[in-house]
Amino acid sequence: MSETTRPTLSIIIPTFNRARYLPDALDSIFAQGVDRVDPIVVDDGSTDATESVVARYGHSVRYVRQPNRGTAAARNAGLALATGRFIAFLDSDDVWLPGKATEELEILEHDPSVDAVISDSERWLGTTLVCSSWLADRGLVATSDQPMRLLPVHLQKGKIFATCSLTIRPTVLERLSLPLFDTSLATHEDLDFAIRMQHSCSIVVLPRVLARVRRFDDGSRIGRPVPGTEYPPAVKRAMAVRRYRIFEKALRLRGWPDDSVSYLQAGRREAAIEFADNLIGWRRPGLGSLVASELRHLAFASAATVAVRGLLPERGRTLLRR
Image (tube, rainbow, N blue to C red; front, side, top):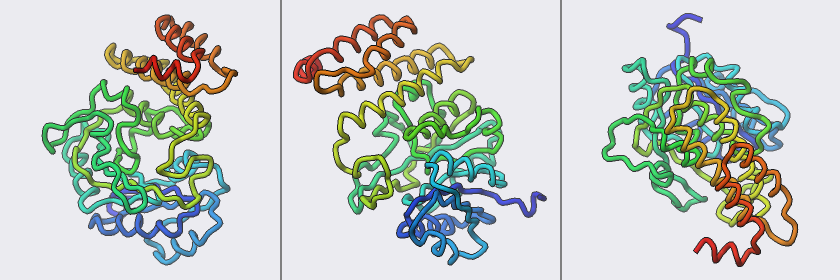
């Protein structure tokens, strides 16, 4: 493929039963005004009208269907098909705001040292704005709207950016271990991807709200609570364990600066404590293995904290947090 016919931007769009919202996502791409965009919709086994919705866009959207294997597998399938000079992501219920692609591409075009650009986003629950700045909510406070480098401290904050706010060079993918998105993770596969990116890439933050993350009670979020409701303790424990394993895996990567290591260790510790704080009833399944894991990492104070908080009754843990 010649540079004159190569897409400027490939956009990976995983989807499952979101025919109702998918046009919003696709229309927001074409409204960017960028030449030669290449939206790739990966239908993860939808049972609704997703295929016919995409068909209305003709050859301007690529469509591929696979059995339902989850978001990570769908993103990996889309990445395998991407041929653009740059790659971006957009979940099928999210939308880009005007100027997003132009502003992020401008940074990448003018500074070859930048591997990836992330911008800010707002979060909506149905028709209600619940967070006006994803970055601020994660503790990243910008002093201006000018681009800035992502710092090691942001590693502890969890996923510092929404996936729909990321644009990367394809060469980034060559530095990351396979699978690019970990298909063994039912959730937090994007956190795992983000941390590995921070290990291997030069990332610039554009602190401007250029995307809208939307959540709907539409039945498409299989295995997750209805958006806007409190996650039950069992779900919180499962998610805490996934985060713990992600931080644990990240610490096995060589080459982290010392300050980055300390933030990753703090993230792992916080995940272990959250697991302990959500144990209920008399049984404490998984507590022993998590404490043992902290001891193997020579994190003795953390192991003691997790053990105490995990063994205390719920009321005792509440008093301890006070």
